[in-house]
Length: 194
Image (cartoon, rainbow, N blue to C red; front, side, top):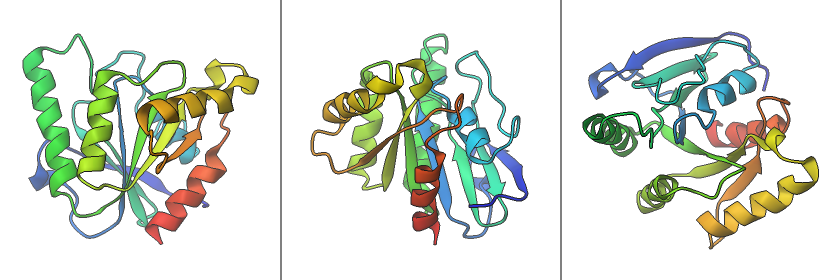
């Protein structure tokens, strides 16, 4: 896909602020600091459209990025950030859940996990939520640049076995650092929104 003019549209803190209209939405979920904002920037070939940070837990709203009036990338707050108070964690969790349950424009959930770690309890909870709500899902095994290229496929298989024993979801490696593996992701997004 050739992206010409992607733009940040709105940060929503409630459903009354979600964009109106019926553009399809590609939603990014994952734990804090797994690379959701970097994924958006890489896919759109922009350096700083989505704000990235080394500090986990920066995103506390739902950020909507309008991609050429064709679809939205929707960046949800990361979960599992330990420095967030329990109350804040519950609030963010409810906020994410409400969006995923009420929003009718969701065409695909892009669930990012870190290639270097087995899925956390929070990752498993998110996976179960996605499956139980029958949401279409693509798993991005992110930070593939952090391990040897020869080990990437093997590690993706290990994570797939761990998180998705039925093997009915697609797992793809990804690296914002090396800007590799993007074509396959675009193919899936194109198929989803067309």
